[in-house]
Amino acid sequence: MYGTRTSMTVGLIAVLLSVILGVLLGGVSGYFGGWLDLLIQRVIEILQSLPTIPIWLAMTAALPAPGHRNGSFSPLPSSSRSSVGQRSRGRFAVASSPCAKRIRAGR
Image 1 (cartoon, one colour):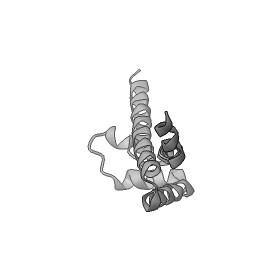
Image 2 (cartoon, rainbow, N blue to C red):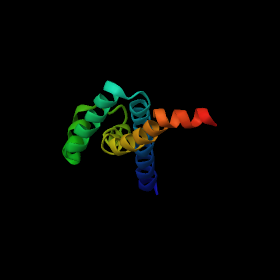
Image 3 (cartoon, helix red, strand yellow):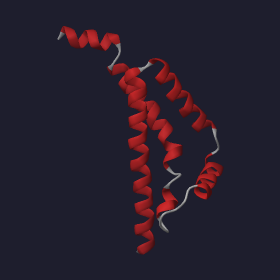
C-alpha cells in the first residue's frame, strides 16, 4: 500500500503543477496578447517539440532532490503544461477580444 500512496502523490502533484502553470501562462498570454503572447506561445511550442523522456532524464539529473521522493515529480509538469497553456490561452483570448468586450458593454 505504501507504493500506491507514493505513486498517487507524485501523480497528483505533477498534474496540479501542470494545471497551475498552464493556466497561469495561458491566461497571461491570452489576456495581454501582443509580443508577450508571441513569446509565451513560442516557448510552449519549443517545449512541445522536444522529446519528453530525455528531457525528464536530464531534468532529474540536473535538479537537486531535497528529499528522497521530492525530486521524482519535478520534471513531470514540463511536458503537459504546454497543452493546458494553449487551451487556456484560447479561452482568455476570446474573453478579452474587442468583439466580446462590445457584446458585454451592450448588455
